[in-house]
Image (cartoon, rainbow, N blue to C red; front, side, top):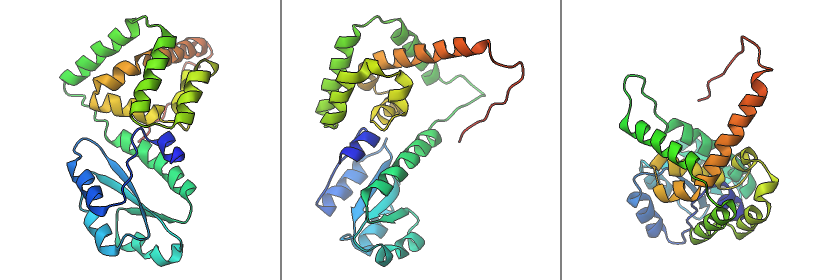
Length: 225
């Protein structure tokens, strides 16, 4: 479970199939990645695939060869594994790809939400918080969402020992939580992570300033999908 909490800001577990279906059908603004055991039958997997918010299904089983046929017959089944680590590795990649796919940009008009986001960003950058207090508030907030205690203690203890980019790109929930908050404009998450957004922005700006003099006149850039 700790591996999963480090990848995603929200992890829900179910032992009852009906409860799992209720969870899937009640979600509208989220994308779901599902890990199931080999005890789940073929018919149930087929039915789960119909949920539009379900992106991928990963099967954790005892005998890989028995269930590999699901990869061929069920489009949303992306992997069949006997260990959890390969599933965690795949989830990290799929989660980032999903985040990119959900970001829409229009060059034909200025979206009101974009304007609101810019104003919110400027406000966050101007706030002078007590960083120690902000870190503690974020940790307490995350405890309520059942994040891994080991990771929360690490943030409290070592936050200043690493750069904001290190935390953002590391195997922790920071990336998924921040992206979810910004994508859904979840004010609670954005305010709780306001100090981190400010630190990340300032750190990137500083790197840009340092490297600007070394940059050639012509350089290549690449657009990620």
